[in-house]
Length: 166
Image (cartoon, rainbow, N blue to C red; front, side, top):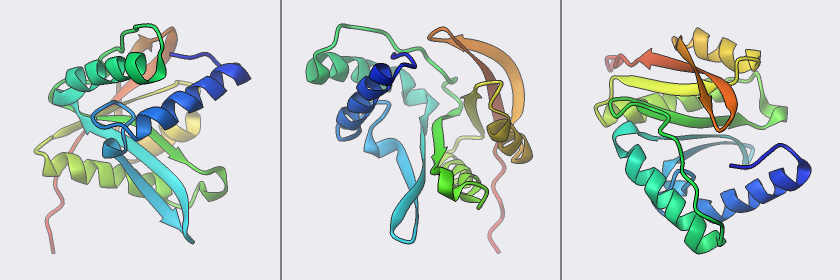
């Protein structure tokens, strides 16, 4: 949707802020779990039900045109309807390697299982070795390579198994 220049990143940040407060879009507050430490946000994960992705994409596309006055564009389906889609995971640089990413992924997986999903999927750039290491350590398996918006990603999936309560 936007490139990698400073101006493109600024435009992307503007879009994300505007979409965050609107309901039912890909970047809405409704799909985000936040980690906090010492009264500050240290990380977040954005995820949603794969069965809802087409509707979420249509809503996002419409909101971008209506609220951000941008020309029409199309989002790509990134997960199967029977998968919980993990769209994004981010941890503040000062808080990496402290288990926050693991906790956020596990929280999203719990949410998926609560919604009766047995699989979670995500995409990651193949050169992002720290993220790949985390995902593989937590049981995600690389299934294939995909190209979205001109960028190459690895498509990972995990079979979700409920942990019995003690």
